[in-house]
Image 1 (cartoon, rainbow, N blue to C red):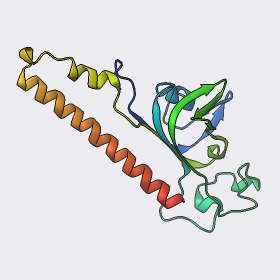
Image 2 (cartoon, rainbow, N blue to C red; image 1 turned 45 degrees about the vertical axis):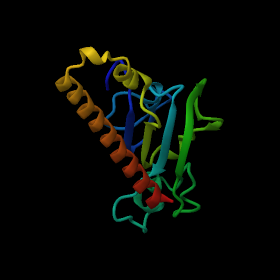
Image 3 (tube, rainbow, N blue to C red; image 1 turned 90 degrees about the horizontal axis):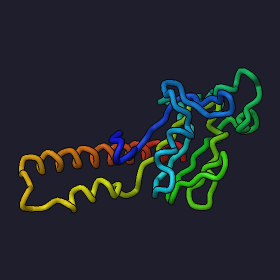
Length: 177
């Protein structure tokens, strides 16, 4: 992440768990809330969904994504409906009110992720102003063609990465729908 620009996209995947009231994913030192903080007050696309193994294990709750099955009780309700899958996709401005996160007026519901192999994908829907301003404010008399080419290649790489993230999120959403 470029500190001046901030995050452009984030993917958190694994078995979500709570520690001292905060939601985490193994392999990430920061909480989910800390990862979302860089996107606060920005236009985003958010996808939250269960991610069963590939191929799905239909003999188990949540097609194999539910870690609660050995306990006989699942907070999401897999003990009543073992085939249901959680999927949420929203687009709008991310904001926070107290401990809750919202996209537009809709609250992001993270509880169904806890104890389940799941994925959270968040990406900006528009390039950061800092990124476009830096190109627009350039004095054409002082432009070094080589430096401009390097900057444009870097931008192309960022946009390509974002496109891949969105494609992956769409594939995951189509599979879970």
